Length: 368
Image 1 (spheres, helix red, strand yellow):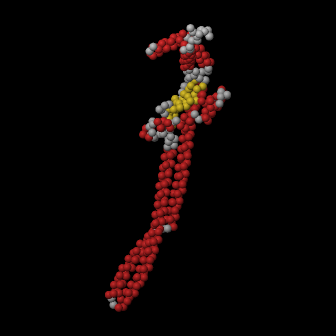
Image 2 (tube, rainbow, N blue to C red):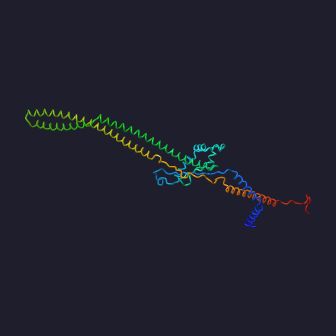
Image 3 (cartoon, rainbow, N blue to C red):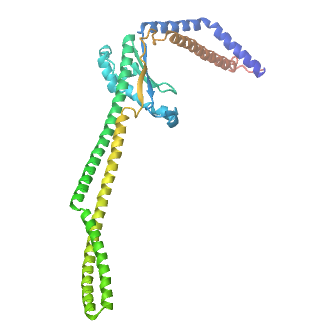
């Protein structure tokens, strides 16, 4: 017999065998559906309320040019799931809504897993908080409470970060103000203790006196070389006196110039420090002003866009789904059982057909 014909015969035999046991299959389906329906109807109804929170980018930030809606940015927003699903917040909610009294025997971890579901809507910036309870009003109130507390918690974290940043900048401003005060005091002290106006005037007067003595010395030397003996002697004596005066004036002028140069250099140094301190203080003051104006706008902002409604349709138990699953199970189990039974019968029949037939002759009688 060809293989295709054998397969057709086997399939027909299999289907015929299942059809002959239809009553057993129908009874199995009916029992499974009845049991599932009975168990489902005896279970309490559960209602799921949903609160949705929109996570907006920081104010003044072009998020499209910076991060856009890239998977990395959306993945980073899952941080806020931990805000809504924190154990401390859930425990406060249980105490506030007296849910521990309703479920006294269940541990808080199991209760949280059964009641609360938090997650980001795929490829969006919306955070969903789902609460499932037998009381629809309590479910909606709890979901809204968790949403509001999540927003508050996010704001408190942002405010704490802003406060710490402002404290750091305020400390920098205080240090910059102290440096500026010291530099201003040093400038005032330098101006008072090391004046330069008198030295500048003395240096100018010394320069004029030096020029006058040089002219007088030139005339005296000229008179000493071209006049009579007595006049020449007097001119030479006058020239010697003028040289001594000129040398003394030169020494005084050099000392005055050096002192003036030191004082001017010290003034430049102190004035440079004062200018640098002023610029540093202005920079820190600008940063502090900017930080104060940006307070609360440096991180994402959470806003409840859908507080949810009191659910009217129960989310569990799902009767059609449970009945369909029971019907499928009631159909599959007997089919598998009947398949195994048919396979066993087939193997046993094949085994009996291949067993050798024993001789019916009496023992000891020989063939002719």
